[in-house]
Image 1 (cartoon, rainbow, N blue to C red):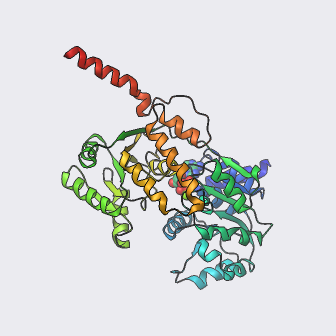
Image 2: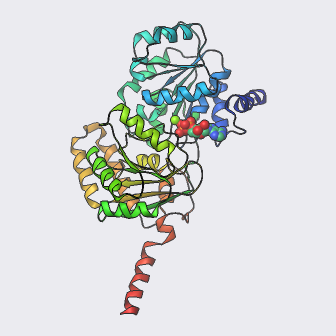
Image 3: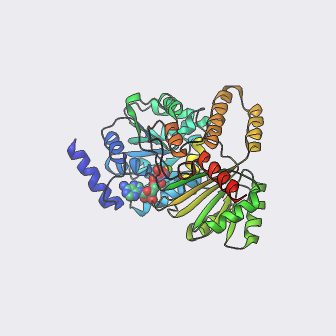
Length: 414
Ligand code: ADP
Ligand code: MG
């Protein structure tokens, strides 16, 4: 009702300091406050955290947040606490575990973050029975689906846990779910079909450029001279990241650092902090880099090789231009990338093979598309976009037309 929404908008201003809800945020918050289970599919950077953090401050009891990565939890804790929200995480490394448990039991927490591995233990269920729970928020909910691009078996234990608390509403959140995955998430988490809320996926300020890779190294050096501002270059392996970072750093036009899971936690933290603080640094990284990094002024994201799927491409390129200013997404692909990806399908478990093959075919269709890249992307996420966007390579210079002009020029100058 109107009173609830008023209270929510009041909290938005006073607790979070934002004048308005963005996109479907208000819709999601309203449902959650009404106690109705929901799956919100919202792009990266759209502000999913707020849709459970805000209700957590208004509802009696604690909101339990299922989150897949410790690093993500710590970022979230920091920003929630900065807003004066009473938040804690239950991790194995947590020296204050006893204090966290006591605070939960005393009803002193708005938010309790926990990883699915821990949440599925009987102990945790007992803990939840010792104090009121306001809401279950399942972040990165695509991890529950084998159709999603990042399946985590422990997410499957969340349904039985939540079923033990039938009166507590559920809020599942994800940025990356096609129709198939959405239906699966609803089912796996026990959320009714009418609980699905999908927000617009278009990122109009991002220019999509997809071209064949000729010579990765020199093409990327050239690219760095053309791009202003901070950027991320995704490479497919740790070794490629190290090689590319070294080569680009030697080229010397600006600071270039590597990031991958083979670096020590200290190095990773140091490189990440340098990147976040910099206005023109380039991070060459594996996909280990990006989740939970809040840097609004990333001006370009390049892929030196193909991403895992359209979902992954959308999520990774979505890290560019969160401030709304013009940004570029540049993919340099080769036929060999697809050959290798198809070879890797032989290692996939049989029950996931069909999904993986579909994902690869969709990606191939994107790179080979003669028409608007954005239209293809948005249709992939179930939207019905106009036929051309005016801000991708194919709209700016339709493939056929460029060739003809080139040919004509050659003929005329001959
Ligand atoms: P997501 O999880 O959807 O990728 P986050 O929850 O991390 O996004 O939020 C991304 C950024 O958007 C954060 O910096 C957050 O403070 C900001 N934000 C969220 N809601 C609003 C809003 N209503 N108005 C302005 N900024 C917002
Ligand atoms: Mg998030």
